[in-house]
Image (cartoon, rainbow, N blue to C red; front, side, top):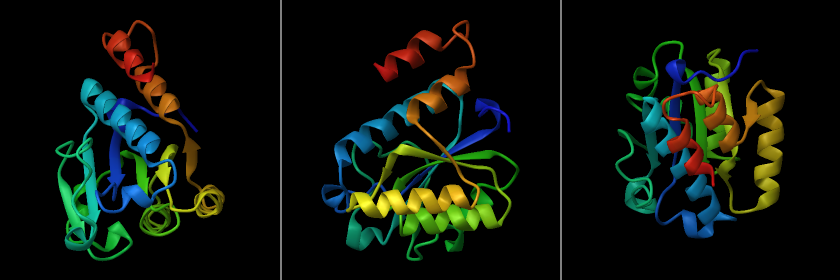
Length: 176
């Protein structure tokens, strides 16, 4: 297994929505880490795709992440069932995923991507659920099925690879 490669990655942000996030355990920290990923992706040219589950009911993407990339609205829990989602991630890019809820929309999306033989990295410190035990069980299940569990810092520094990268200073400031 090789390191994550910014030139072959896509960041996928699942359902960080305004009416959902207040109920998510440690929500502000998760949103802050997702924002770090968005900013690092911007510095390094990593494309971003976002989803919103039932936006009429759960609201749009939280303000901190709004506008980070194209959004696919869906009613299915599994993003892979949403019109346009699979087309938007066509190819062999590594998929770096963060989002909510770990055991519902997020988890079903990851499992479907793994079933489609996609290389999936789950950013555990940017994945949420209402109950910590739901997140814990979901992460264990996803890892057991082949997802690689990583952290925000792991993603940023693997994307950079070296302190000599032209964006090193800017990207490393995101972590502080």
